[in-house]
Image 1 (cartoon, rainbow, N blue to C red):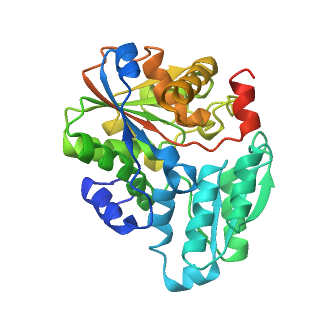
Image 2: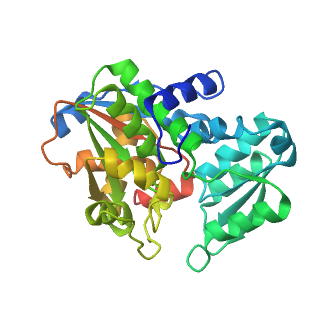
Length: 322
């Protein structure tokens, strides 16, 4: 990749070849009930079946496996609310090295335990008062580790785009692709793949109502910061879009829909009861936008990415109301 602001379809295809046989090629599911409720043919890409339970493994492994032998030997660092943490921890284990992960103190227990289970050392911070980027960069520098950020990295973005690439390869052309948005890496990679294959495909991001930093930024034409969001969708609790991801998304993303925590919970219930899928709140937000009819002029053939399923039974039950 020659420029940090450019990620291309060729990069996504290269990433797909690079992670083949290590990352899972996740299933695409259909639901007649979903189609009827939404009024479209919906193709559901189930990244909750990806290794570590979320799409994040794609980008983390694509980036980690490209490090030099010396970098791999010294170890890898990352900062994450959970899924990228697990992804880097597993990528490090696959490469025979160690990982140190900076995580918020209030990270869901299931995600923290899973990260430790992959062999990572965990360092915590307060997400509401601390700057995770500054703390993470200092941690990596002090320990001499290679830092893999959750979205501000071209290899990470290209790796995330392989989920959309697989979806379109399996389903054929899509009129629209609906993608959850946190820091913007998944939608940046997805938009790169979708628009690269068919420029007419609408790419629509979905954010929690309390975490609309990307929507505000796209409307303003510049990156906007908001207070750290308080939402059940912890994986989407970003306060500012990434610089690199925003550079991609402002060119390729057609719009952002917002959903409430209640609508996210309803989508989790629908996925569980009608599709037999366990999806975490962040993973269900794009589905929530479809079910709540938050997308105007929805076309006929629509792809949606369920980005992850990392949630414990206690928290799942709590969100769904017991």
